[in-house]
Length: 386
Image 1 (tube, one colour):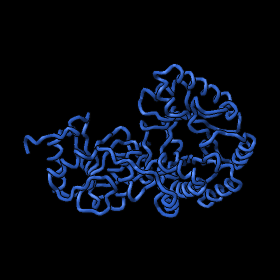
Image 2 (cartoon, one colour):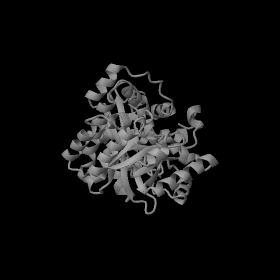
Image 3 (cartoon, rainbow, N blue to C red):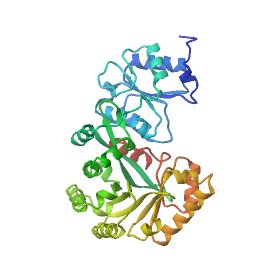
Image 4 (cartoon, rainbow, N blue to C red):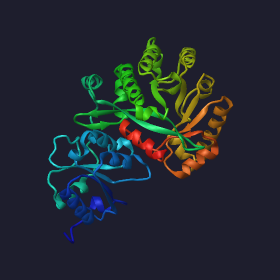
C-alpha cells in the first residue's frame, strides 16, 4: 500500500522494532506489510513462545511492540502478556492477533490478517491506558482469595564476574478490568486496610514454590522476599515464614528478607530481636531502598543486617548530583565497615554499572541486567545469561 499515511503517534517515536509470534503465513504477511507502512526499523518473527520470552527477557534486545497470536503462544500466552505490561519496564506494547476473548484490558486486538488493521493497531498500541480508579476493599480482598496476585522475579548479579546471585520477588495484581497493576497501586491500599500480612504470606508461598522448581533450583540462587516492618514484627510472622520455607525444602541460607518501611522504625529493640531470631535461623537480612530520606540509617546499620540496597533514584543521580554521589560513597563505606554487602538498584546503563563498580558496590540490579520476569521467563533468562 505505497503512500500509506504514517500516524503522528508513530512518526514521533524514535524506534519501532517489532517482534511477531505467529505460525500463520497470513499474519506474517500482514505484519510485514504493516511494518513497511509505518517505517519500522526491524521486524523479527518466531514461531516459538519460549524463544519470544527469551528475546523479551534479554535487556540488550528492545521491542516497541509484541504482536501475539495466542493460538501460537499456547500455555505461555499469560507469561508473554505479563512481560509486556508497563510495570515490567520493557516499554513493549502488546497487540493481540486473531479473534480472541482473552485480550487484557486496553490491549488492541486485530481480528483479521489485514495490513491496514495491523497498522491501525500499532498506531494506538502506545497510547496511555485510562487512569485506574482506587481499588475498593472488596476488590482487595478478592485479589487475595483468587489467582489475581502474581509474582515476578528480578535478578541480581555480582559485579566482579556478572554471575547471577539472587532474585528479588515482586508482586503484581492482574485485575480483570484494569489489567496488570504494579505494587504502588495496590500494596499501600492493602497495608491501609490491614491486609499486608495476608498479601505477604501469599506472595511468599508462590515465590518459594517457583524457586524450588528444577529449572531455577539448579542455579542455587538466593531469593529475596520483601517484608513490611509491621508484618515482620507480628508475633507469628517468623514462624509462618519458616514453615513455608521448610515445606518446599529450601534452606534458610538461600533466603534473604528485605525490610521495607511503610512507616519509620519506632521500636528498634523489637526490630533487633526479630532480626536476631532470623539470623539465628540462617536467613540473610537486607535494608531495602536506602536513600537520604531513610531515618535512623546509622542505627539500622548497627543491627544484624547482612546487606543493604541503595535506592535506584540515588544510584541514577550519582552521575550528576554531588550530594547523591557523596551519599553513595558514605553509605558504601559504612556498609563495608560493618561487613555488609551492597546492592546497587536501578542499574540501567553500562555507565551506571561502571560507576557503581568503581565505588565498591558488590551486586547490581536493574534493567541493564533483566526486567522483572515471570518464573518461566526467569528460567530462560538464566540459560541465556550464563
